[in-house]
Amino acid sequence: MRVLGSGLGVLLLSSCGFRECEPIDEALVALLPARLSESGLYPALAPGEVPGDIVADDVIAYAPRFGLWSDGAEKRRWIRLPAEGVIDTSDPDEWRFPEGTRAWKEFVRDGVRVETRVFERVGPEDADWVGAAYLWSEDDTDATLAIEGEVDARGTAHDVPAAETCAGCHGGRKSFLLGFSAVQLAGVEGVDLAALAAAGRLSEPVPEPTVPGDDLDQQALGYLHANCSHCHNQDRPERSGSRCYDPDNGLDFSLLAGSPALADTPALETADQAIGHGEASELLWRISERNTSGFAPSMPPLATEVVDAEAIETLTAWIARR
Image 1 (cartoon, helix red, strand yellow):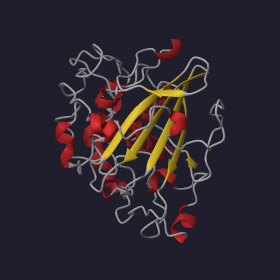
Image 2 (cartoon, rainbow, N blue to C red):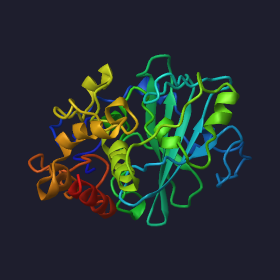
Image 3 (tube, one colour):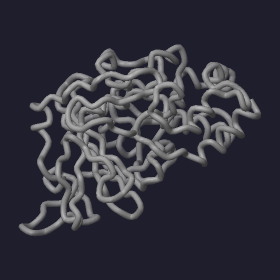
Image 4 (cartoon, one colour):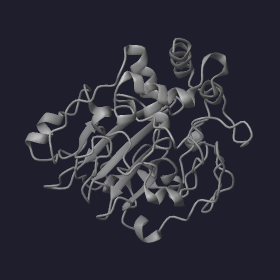
């Protein structure tokens, strides 16, 4: 993503148009602590003590099965549920998290710990989330709330996003959190869904979802799920109308892996309508570009400036045989 201008009211150029982002609610931002060390990610710190790699006992580390491409950045993720909080898992594709849920995602670029993003559900409605990034200090002693973000932060090519742009992607799903779900946690280490269900933290047990096809199918569908489905799905929440990035096409198909649209192999033909075939594939053309002109737009249109060569190789092979 390249931010044009600075501060509130930035413009994001996208594959299907752009508009001014709505300023983030200052009252919501005020609910977040000023420093990451005060967010609950780490154990209680003594005066002068700095955060390390040990997280608090009630924080769960996890890594999704299918990763979002972030220009090669290394990422770590954590989540904390409120005491006695239960995740509503009745819809396997759209988990609803209890009020008070807090999640973190750390970004390390070229060996530099640049930012940690924090999301918290602050109310009973699906849209009641607040999120922002924390920019790490030059001496790595703590990270400070960075509402307006920062371009090329800490001397890297990594852009820390402004808080008002978070809904550009997260606003496309009812659950808001994109990487903590049935299909993303199936078969990965670190999160025991059966144990969470037994402890009463899930509203109902979660059967392990099956992504269709062989290994190549699953890799391709996993990429589309992690990088595209938060916009390209048929169940966009009503709040998506206020997003500063809103695709105006592609809503007649879903790229959610594990969703009814991709639940069996014949249904993959639905995705083929959007993907195209061979060298004529629009998808390959778009993911092979990085620009913000709006004329020959890239995919994903936000939060990336570097082409994902491995994804292109996977999708090229997958499309060629379909």
